Image (cartoon, rainbow, N blue to C red; front, side, top):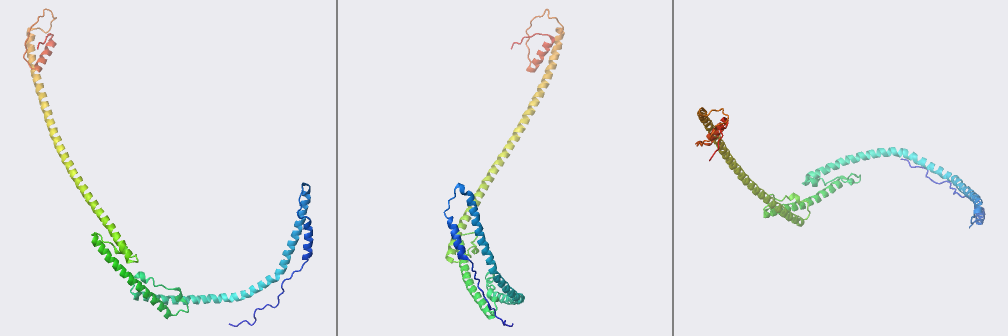
Length: 345
């Protein structure tokens, strides 16, 4: 790339110098304003005060307009100078942007190629480290590995140092895990836990003293939970046994009640049958008595006519031997044939 022959340099600078009748204007304004300094307005002066304010505003605006116009005129050379410099920068930027784009493309490709190479180094280091997966993942690609200035030997050295550091950490962690596992077995056996303590619940603790205290506390909690569970099972078994015994008692009582009810029903049926038999026998006896009374009535009717006006009747003492049904049948017949009788027990 050729160097510029012409260097930037200022060929002419005319610093802006503005001279105007500043002193004369200042003196005149101080004189005019001084006349009205401390002026107190009365009610009769309102019109005059309004005109005075308008005149003062006019003078103030004239001075401000003069300042703006003069500043604009003086700023035009500076604005032109800035535009010229921006134009020169634009000429350079048009070429630079294209070169930069190509450079960044090559640099990105270089980084990608180097990143793939470094990733392969890391993959090999992980496989050969003998570390568990979580530790292997801590061997990472660092941003400085992709710098042009960092050579392959330096990268391998840094990765090896990281692997060595992680291996030491893993050895310490393995020793801690073994201590935790032994402590879990010891506490589980001492407390007689049916479900031994799981060492995984304590491997996150970095100090064995702390882990030991946590394991002992967890063992006590597990022992209490186990005792409570056993007691609950025993209580339930006891309740179930009591309930089964009660159920058997109730079932036996129901069977006895059913047998008793059956016996009572059979006895009641027997009594009902006996009552029916007695009723039938009574009906038969009543029919027999009625038949006997009928025969007696026929014999009496031969002696005493049925139709009579009641004249010439006499009293007779009649002794009758009969059961209740026969007696009732006799009384009914005597009433039917018009024989009045008096019962003397």
